[in-house]
Image (tube, rainbow over all chains, first blue to last red; front, side, top):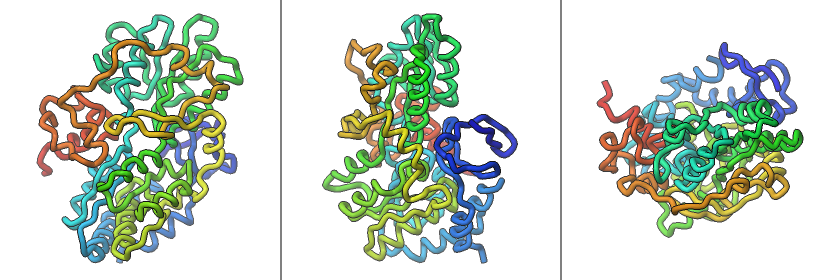
Length: 53
Length: 366
């Protein structure tokens, strides 16, 4: 279990499925369980190709 | 908020909408199979940004909505047992069974409680251990939700917590897609694949579906920029005559999925034929507890007997769920059927297509 900060609200979440997550990582949480970690570089890649002019 | 604002940026959304309009030369039909995406498409008015020749169809992606009446009847019968505390997600309380809802059973005195997580039900079961009472968790959801239930069942088994059992109505997306696509005239030309199902399962199950049915499948997320980017990726493939699986939600979805979650599913559940509201029985589309966990299977502990289940005859939820009808096609929409008094599950859940249209489309936009 770990504590996840949801933009100000904190909650205990099961992190058993994301063993590589470290403190400070962003995770996707579903019904009390982390189901994935957020890859910031992949996020930037999609955003960059729709950068507003 | 970080990881949200940029994906709701109106300028980026407009850039994508313009690119879609410039790409599309023919009519195409794109389906999403995820209640969260259905909700977001209607909420943000994504369909109104698209050329008229593009049709968005909402598939059977709301887990509450596809849960058949018989499961509700079973849950209600279990909830009415004096020793049972029935826990489930909030939406399930108002889904109509053959004769009333779990909320009605609660009003009659059944102990029915809303939980946020299977872990809350597990914690309650620990508190009730040795009292003769038993917590039954009514577990609905796709591959996104099922790993958490799998882990909760494993913990209950490890603790030999016989005050816990799960009534599992989990479903898998790929067999439902195969069932939709087996139709000689499928309703869709391209598919947006649900980001959070794929976050768990990865994309490998979708490769043979794309190939066999020549169907572009694009994994995408839940924000306006995600959805428009996904739609652009689908129409780009359609216009070029391609049919590939494209993961546009790579910030969350790894191609191989989330291994530990997938493995938990494998250890605890096995595929089985399951009834879907509106679609009937689909082979291998359900997840049932493996025999090793039979002691924690509420369906086995409290088998259902009684009358066969029936739905309200006015409700067209079954056709809405497979993209054959829109919510507004229903004579009862917004009149006899509202989120406060739903006839069918698609009007109950915030992820249901009828509820989304009622909330965002039943009044003229200012």
